[in-house]
Image (cartoon, rainbow, N blue to C red):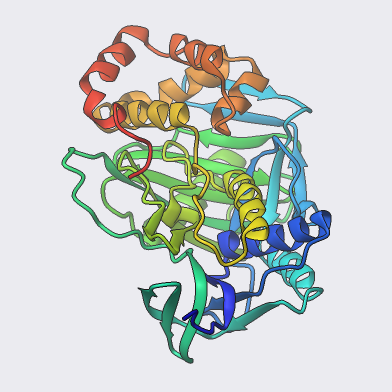
Length: 398
């Protein structure tokens, strides 16, 4: 007997990954002229606000073009000795503010009666029961044929390998400098010229205008760095680099992104699949995730529309070659954090901009990857490939 359910698909967590999948499903069904599957999204927050920023190099179109608030065609990196400015118009660096993204997603989902978003609902447990899954939530049980779980905390597992386990800690302040202070058309992607005393550390500057910018202090370390320290870093950097003291703070954001060699875990069981950070969609060597989420969601949506409510095999979150490269890079950075600034500057300096963008967005081909390796300290990196073979000579996912 087939059990009655509340939805063909339940999406747990309606943040970037959950909303993206729902929007892609709606648009895929519309293009195919097929009925939209019944989708229920549940999200613990009770309202959306600007709570984060997504950025990255554009390599393909996506449904959230209206949420892109700024674009830059030049970006810079520096390590205190060298400053490299590169750029390309083919792959602009784009900024998506969370509040605009949430508004665009909700407007699109509101056009389809088969999709429902419930805010203020927390999921306590997911239990597969034959042909469906029961979600125990703060608003009662929900039954769905399949579940897509985007809650950020991935399960801790023993992989049998000594994994690199780093954190990207960041705090960003959007500030009004009170005068023209920033170079409006160049993103400071990584400025390593700041103190490295607390671990691998760089500043990141998104200039929205000559006087307004988002300035972030970012650490890549085994342990978290305090929010207070990161905020102090931003103010000190504004004073030392731009001569700006007492800037008006318009917005704050903070976050942590795991940077690990551990394999992604694509599903808990046949009918419970993982999305977002939980599904391995953040690039471990950089933390970028937005573009990967869009490409993954587009591929997954094709299956959801074609086989609503059925068990499906999710697409690979990231290419196997990109996963292997990231594991080697993370192994090198973990072993030699003091050499990481020079390594990143080398990549930006030696690689053609479009190849660099392909590499940073997981679109690099075999020849691209060889050129990337050749732009690094080849002897040291070759030794790291051999030393870290237990980490990269594995399936990308588990």
